[in-house]
Image 1 (cartoon, rainbow, N blue to C red):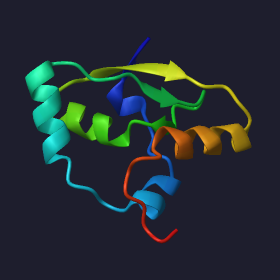
Image 2 (cartoon, helix red, strand yellow):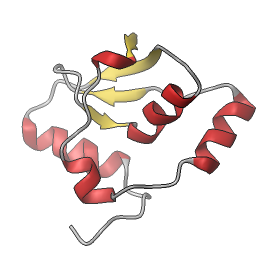
Image 3 (cartoon, one colour):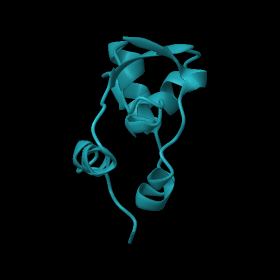
Image 4 (tube, one colour):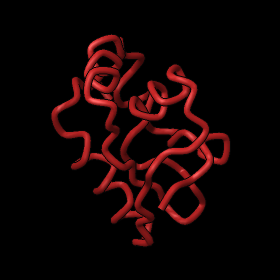
Length: 93
């Protein structure tokens, strides 16, 4: 499903866990392919996976983005947050 980007909320753990990252490479990849993998949000539209993709979409002027809604309990949502981002460089959190 598509969701308006302005309805999305950043996961409060995102910056604590991953800090601020340079999205230049991701921006180049998305610009070249013209495709953004769907993000994952909870029913309250808090991003579980896809913060960088949302930032790039905003930079490119998109107003909507494809998403999947995950309705699991808070522990399952945390698990999705960590597993979907397992290859990102983490801070010391």
